[in-house]
Image (cartoon, rainbow, N blue to C red; front, side, top):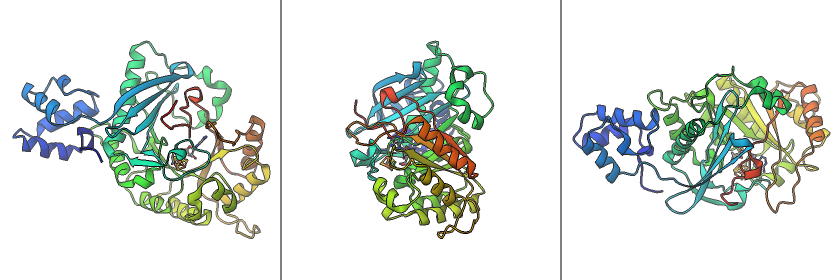
Length: 385
Ligand code: SAH
Ligand code: SF4
């Protein structure tokens, strides 16, 4: 792990540091406000601090650890991807997506990933290392500043009409449109890496971003996606913050799921659904299941039916209907990964798959793709091209 930076510190940590430096605690609160409310990225700009303190901050502790290598834009400017170098040389990516009513940042939680899912570009890298909480927090702050810069440069929030074509479905879930997009409204932990394989740092980042004295991101506006680590789901169920949970399912049976997601051998579907039921019972919150559609692999109507039955709580024998899971399915047409033999399901197959689920009473939406031309879409982040 690199040396802690200011972004690795809670307000309480900052107060300790400032007291050690022989200054009153309110200075720590000023710094915290500068970092998380004013989004200042250079201590010299913290003009409400004494000159000497600014100098000390600038010389004695790093503000952050990410070095911006490159920004790429797509979709007419409303998808923006940053490539960052870490102090030890690994690279990670962060994606900002601007919508008519909201702006979402997709954050990486690890450099690379150990899970090796066959359809995912990050999975081909292997795990390089876990990110610190500060390195996750810093990605959200980059996105906030990037949104401001984009707006200052005349960037316009797209209108609803631009999205009407394929946006109708996700639109239904969206909050009421805001007139002025002044800040990041949603955070998704769906970038590179498996958040629950780096749980402690990830949770520290969630708490920091949620802190009402600082960045103040609502818990319900944050979503974590997991490949299905049972222990992580159980832990999240016991946390005090109602953040959203998405689970990568991708197949209705273990034989198929294990060919796509190797970790399924350790946490098979029955265990995953059992802990999901624990989670929904304990929290009262609906989960979403992500399902990447791969042409000719997991996108047949009979597989949609098997999935629907699973989620409606059928018993293994398939005869009785049990208790339906409190859930929603998010279909993700696969985004191509260079060199992969897999294929993206055609539109009609996606629509047919969705229809089977809906007819069976399972709520289901199709995720709208963003940033494919700059390899910023789901599962394309690998820190290359
Ligand atoms: N490790 C976590 C979160 C990061 S991946 C997880 O696996 O859930 C975020 C989502 O993108 C997951 O649902 C993942 O299965 C999906 N994904 C990975 N590769 C993809 C690809 N090439 N096309 C579309 N979705 C992909
Ligand atoms: Fe890791 Fe998620 Fe990619 Fe699987 S899909 S390799 S868990 S980042």
